[in-house]
Image (cartoon, rainbow, N blue to C red; front, side, top):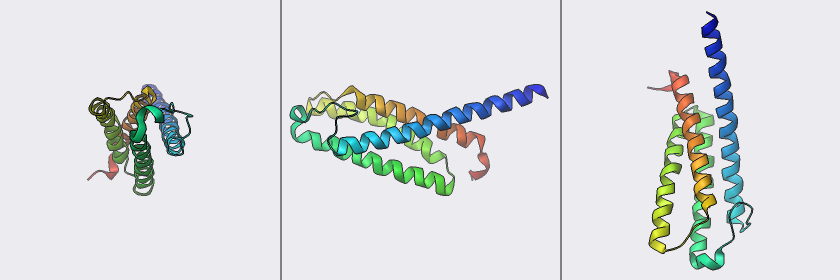
Length: 141
C-alpha cells in the first residue's frame, strides 16, 4: 500500500514538473514569436541584412507558430484534449527538419536559437500532452 502511495506522489510530482515546464515553453514560444515579429533581437540575432527578403519569411513563420500555439492551447483548455498538445509537439519537432531543408534550399544559416526553441517547445508539448493523455484516458473514444 505504501508503494502505491509513493508511486502516486511521484507521478503527481512528475506531472507538476511537466506542467510547469510546458507552461514555460508556451510563454517562451509566444514571447520569442512576438519579439521576432516586432524585429527585436531578444531571442534571435538580427540578421536581416544577411537574410534580406528571407527575413520576413522567418517573421511570418514565428507569427504562424504563435497563432497555432494560441489555437491549440485554447482547444486543449476548452475541450480538455491533451492529444492536441502532443500533436503540436510532434509538429514542432518536424519543423526543425523543415527549417534545415529551408536553410539548405536558400543557402542561408539560420540562428541556432530557432532550433533550440523548436526542440524545447516540441519536447515540452510532446511530453506534457502525451503524459496527460495517458494519465487521463477518459476523454479518448
